[in-house]
Length: 293
Image (cartoon, rainbow, N blue to C red):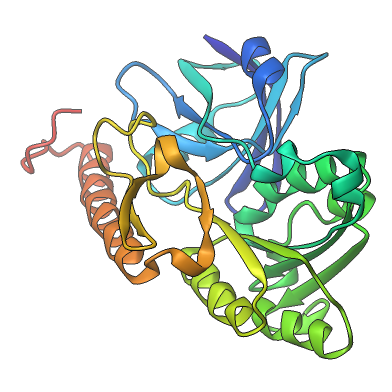
């Protein structure tokens, strides 16, 4: 069992949890993920590591209540435990292989959308600790959905905020803000985008115009976390890749986002079916849809 040391509400339906998992904390690197289960009958949920503290033995995750399984995770409180917390999984971010001298000569821009802000934080923190210059753009629908802004401001060279409704920062999309910054003279060597699939697609289309190398994280396309089930398949550069074991990070300009979004839509339909079953059970009806769990 993996005890929950801390739980905090970050925004509506978004919760931070600090989990006691010493072996994972000692081995975790920026860009990696974990697989979480609430109990022995629970669904395997992939979550990118939002922070880790080897000295404390803790790993931080951020979860949004989207479906049945994420609601179960978020229903737990500090003092309770998760049944499984497997990781760290996937390949670390490529930049950790660079020397401090090489990193000091680079200028990064990270683009975070919604809950994708959480996994951006440990990457920016690591780069900051190694002397790199890192600008961060955080996007959200409204100011009430912004997360990690204070933590990010402490490690980013510059923090920019974009909201769809203009309630804070730039009024518009993260791609529009990026183009504005470039037009004003900002120059970047590399971009990293993490967030909704549609956001990452349009970031890739935008950065391609500027020949700006861009990396995206596809950790949402996972089920078992080992590549064995094949659910994480994605086409990158015309070849089939397995997100669990070959990712989760890939060259954004080579990802077939339309295919990836279709695959993601298949999981959404299944999640809606599960939600209907849970609603029936909560109302005291017998499930007739054929789900055992």
